[in-house]
Amino acid sequence: MPLSIRKLTSRIGAVVEGVDLAGRPDPSTITALRDALNAHKAIVFDDVNLDNAGQERVAGWFGDLTTAHPNVPAVDGTTNVLAVDSETSKANEWHTDVTFVLNPPQLTTLRSVVTTPYGGETLIANAGAAYRDLPEPLRALADSLRVVHTNRYDYARPTATTTQRQEYDRVFVSTPYETEHPLVRVHPLTGERGLFIGGFAKRIVGLSNSESAELLRILQAYVTRPENILRWTWSPGQLLIFDNRITQHYAVDNYDDHPRRLNRVTVAGDVPAGTDGRRSEQLLGDASHYSKVLEVAA
Ligand SMILES: [Fe+2]
Image 1: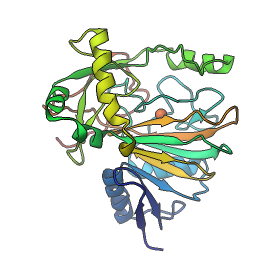
Image 2: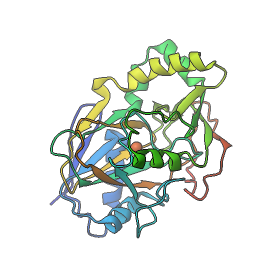
Image 3: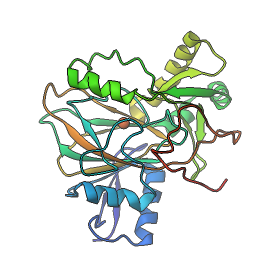
Image 4: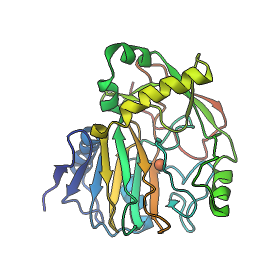
């Protein structure tokens, strides 16, 4: 079957068919998938029937893997698989994965293991479209700003109600990290600009906490406009890959107490650069045990 790419919405998302994920990919297939990621930001494969090792292998088509998480241990028997499990965390807040380190993952892969009888969708937002939607004066302001991201976080969340979830949160923040990133990130492969904020973005450099919160709220509203969002409803045995450099995501908590489990494997990323070429700087912590730095040509 030839490779086919079917758009899911005008701004984000595509279903990919005709790729044998169990086989060895040829370079032209990987190029086509990378092009699809650049164009659509999130791609989905149906009926993949991968196990953890298979998910790691497919993620590895796109680069070196990170370990599971800077602070959270991997799923037993793996080094690269993080359990995204409703028993430990519901992830129902907008975020980009692991932006509190110097080089957050370039790609996130999510594989459905246990799906819910209703709800449990993953929302993925196109942060490049959000940037282009900004009125020009706000775009110019955003271009000039830097933001501190941290996992030191107010985890007084309504969903952390069980002991298991509170323990997960404790481990998540156990070693603190802080990184200063450009607010507008230039995608290293496409040159596309995107808002680089999300749930770990805590403070805009040079602004007070309340000014930061106000401005982040205004900018974030552009990311989460319905037109910029793919709402993916899971079935078992699917693989979703999104470009973590230019998206945010959110797990909708609308499935009551049903169990929900996705396994996550991420691909090591580059150090972000802003519109002036200035790179991110780690302010606190060293996450080199978590991820290699992907070098990309300037
Ligand atoms: Fe996430």
